[in-house]
Image (cartoon, rainbow, N blue to C red; front, side):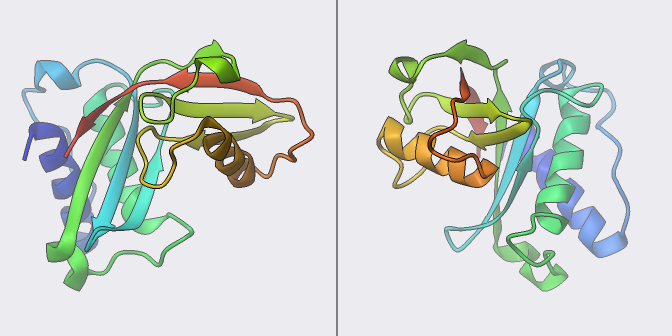
Length: 167
């Protein structure tokens, strides 16, 4: 388990068990000193159990971004009830560091290689790359529109990004 995943796991376990938010490691590893958007995904028995993130950095560094998003993924993903202490031993963690989004067209997308961010009318929909069962650009766009509640007939701005995935 690498440092990014260990930090997400420690953040969730400490918060669920003790109600405390951990501090970033000191000294901060060089790889965590930068700023980046970060998504933390939790899986239980191979199924999604929580996923929350930021597509642009909101914190001072990657470590703080991981801690905040790991806790939110465990407690605030409205698709799932908050994680319980008895589940902790069954959770697998993934931490995705996002590249800055770049404006593109539909022709520039590849759901295996690029994540997708769409925007229209103040709404945003985001999908990480290389998700199971999403193999076409049309499917990626359809799901991102659905998540953002953007109608099919609405013109959207399209952005793509890559991720550095840690498991």
